[in-house]
Image (cartoon, rainbow, N blue to C red):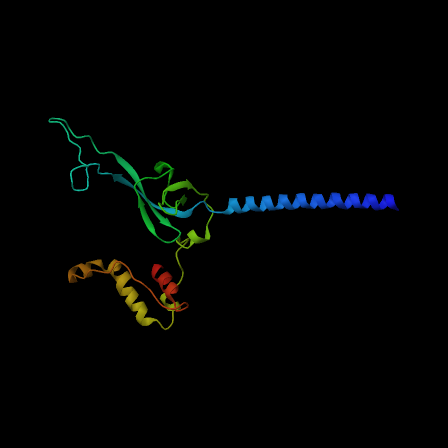
Length: 204
């Protein structure tokens, strides 16, 4: 009996140690999963890539930023670089004269980027998988909603059409009358009052 008890105690101690080892491995793997699924800094999407000429002669008004050229010497042509317009997951748009750690030639509109939260410098390209925060900024396909799907907002729909749709479909009339259309429209109100539905119907 004593030998059996001693053997069982040894087995129990061995199993306990194995459980502790497995618990440590599980914790390490969970930490690795969290690190791999965590976004680098801030998610952004490439909006536009444009040619950018940085004016090196621009100073602060004191002439300190100007470069003197000798008589008869032609000024050097200004270097054209690629600037990036990005849209972050916070729905803000930023102009970046430099592509940061990525080459502008490797970027395409619509690609996902990891950018710095403060300076918005580009760190790296992200995989093309959808991120829930970025997906809110994109439209996958043309909306199917129509104005007839919205009830009780006839006045608001009329104002929306006059402000957004008519300046595009009847541009000549606005020019003749000298009416300057608004640059956009702000829909406000409590949740569930049809703001998103109106916007989707207008986009359709």
